[in-house]
Length: 269
Image 1 (cartoon, rainbow, N blue to C red):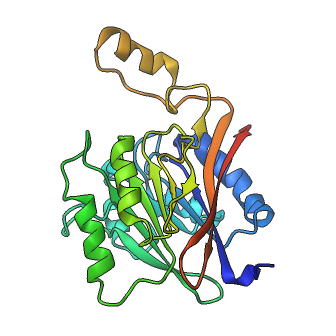
Image 2: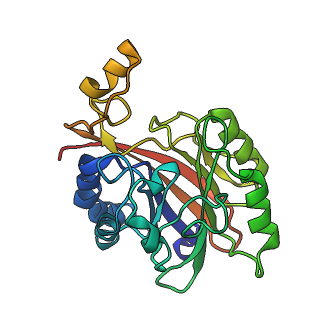
């Protein structure tokens, strides 16, 4: 029998969309931490503020209700009040491959209650996204150029548009990190698996947001853009929330993932 203390159980929650997604997380995460015996919870929070951006108060609400680290992506800059907060030392990440003088940081070390540390990294793809530095080179720089070796368990949120770029990153980092988990497209993919060298992978975790929507936004505000090609202002939808996450189990000593399981639930808010 495997010693439970030799393993880490981490849940990563997909892009949380607006108030409905936030209420679903706040209302269910404490029970989920107990039910699933979780050591660490990471959540992508770049869409918390009415569907676009993050504010300090929303981040603090997640921390108060069981989230340990918040990752993000291209929408992290949508609310100006987050800029100074990113430099405050709170565990909120912006993508690693933004310029060095951008607010915040792209990775951190999270200390567990027992003293073990976990590296959490946020990096962003380039295809159909902002033309940032190469995410592959950025990961090389972090993994190979850090002043001290990172701890064995390394969780990567790869915020990226296309599955081929996500697939490439998974294979590129196989055996070098514990998990490469895709976010951004809000639709859960069916390819959760362990790669040959021990890295857990999924192309997209999926959103935590209104199920009856277009990637979290109301039909009334999204469909006209497709029908008329005119700009519309998107509004977060209402109704039951699809809670999408993955749970990864990994060996603390080696960082090798031993399982990845999708969690998909419907939450009434």
